[in-house]
Amino acid sequence: MFSASFFCLQDADGTPLGVCSLSVDVSGNRRARERLAILSEASTRIGSTLDVMQTGQELAELAVPLLADHALVDLVESVSFGVELSARIGTTSGRLPLLRRAGLATIDPDVPALPWVREEVVHPHPNSSFAAVLRTGRSHLEPVLDTHAGPWVDHDPVRAQKVRDSGIHSLMVVPIRARRCVLGLALFGRSEEQKPFQEDDQLLAEELVTRAALCLDNALQYARERTAALTLQRDLLPHRVQGGAAVEVASRYVPADMDYGVGGDWFDVIELSGARVALVVGDVVGHGINAAAAMGRLRTAVRTLADMDLPPHELLAHLDDTVRRMSEEDADNPDQVPAVVGATCLYAVYDPVTRRCTMARAGHPPPAIIDPQGRVVFPDLPAGAPLGLGLGLVPFESVELQLPEKSLLALYTDGLVESRDEDIDVGLHRLGTALAQPGAPLEDLCSRVIQPLPTQAPVDDVTLLLARTRALEPAQVASWELPSEPAAARTARQAAARQLSAWGLEHLATNVELIVSELVTNAIRHGQEPNRLRLIQHQVLTCEVFDGNTSHPRPRHPRILDENGRGLFLVAQLSRRWGSRPATAGKVVWAEQDLTARPLPDAHRPGDDCFVSTDLKAPPTSPQALGGTCKK
Image (cartoon, rainbow, N blue to C red; front, side, top):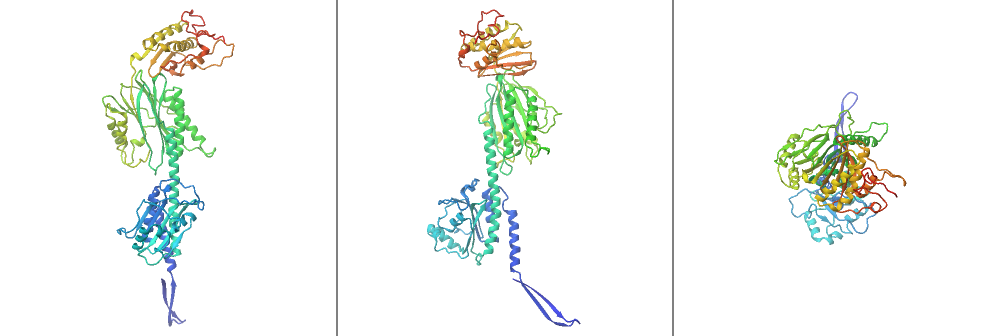
């Protein structure tokens, strides 16, 4: 192509002398402009999603008809499943990897004779040009395609005949490379265009493939991070939740789609002392592996704080401090104001003895409560500020609710009820309607709630925790008010023995009497009135001693000649676990015993050198009645 210009030649007086013609070959400029236009279009059409198979199809569709009449994109099979390659160019062993057809485009899709099918598995012949490109990572240009001879023709004569029938006469094979690895091949062929491929066409094809390779590499890195985050989150979330004697539980977790990444949702069910149970659901701001790691740290912190038996509002206050410290520790520059790492949380404690549920929330959606008749209510809980925002001037508040037996509690994250297309009230109504099925199995209710979600993965994580409350029978609980006098230990031992006999747990009497004696003795010696003993029979036997002193007991490490200080050590040896928690007007010291008999440690068996408190005939003021002392 030439650009021609004509102009008149004149002398000094303006008299025409002739005509001058100037011709310039602009074919190269035109090709350059066309090439830039194709590359510009590639930047908008390739890599619209993080799906590697879709990216391969976008590359093929762009190349036809701008560059070729037919285009194929074959990815190494592991890449098609989102798995990164480890083998570098030039280090491939003798066995070639399998390929999967990710992209397919042709100038005439109605031709039935074309030998290609998308997503089919491709076995490259070891001696073919395709195998050479896979090994070396260098492009192969075949301006005139020989379809009558060659290893691939002999290897697959049926397909070779179909290629001949299609009229393909020129071929380019371009490797898809990223970080010194070959992710696949891009094949370009011409049939309608009679001009064969030239080196300029190869350069353009390599430019297109390079842009596609960058998109594929980004998708693979994201898939790797998402897989790691999802694996981390699933490992950190409870694999099996149990509500003990307090509640029946079921749960669901649905991760977000690939475009948004795994979030920081978490849930937990924590068995507490006195047959109680803690229910917790939280959501860390953000997505990806950092959010999943922060979620794991917060879940661990909640479990630690729950073991301290703190009220819900106090637990959230401590958790708020934890999140703020995490933000400060994660700041890159100590002199820079740390970025806020926010989170929301709902924490509830249910007691099957009193059927009371105490809950508090930190910027989290309120729970749904469905009574046994199917009536749904979202209690008006103080919202509280999200965790980590430093809004300490707004304290968290606990609310106590009385729940009938078989009430249903639904704790969830905002991904279940919030959407860009509808108001949150619509989501809450949909949730309440799905749960208003009295007596339905919890697993069925979980499926009923999750089923209306879009068939594709949601834009945010979805977490649902259902808990149906239980109540202990009055016959499973026994309590006694105790006087603040040394004889109370003996009275408590006798009352506990009679109650164990009524429950058919006589085989636990020896251990329980020792535990009761030690705890009651400590309450009388170091506590304040009122004093009370309570036994709870559920999945374990719980012994609780209430007193009016807010100071919590701490195990001591007595020296050899000390006569006191071994009581809590003895309690720890005799029980499966023990601890203390704050109460309304004091504290509770508790110990749990398995319902099966547990042998008494040899060092504290009656009849050894220890004076233990099982001697019911001992005078009230004797060491035996007050818990005993040890000669050893």
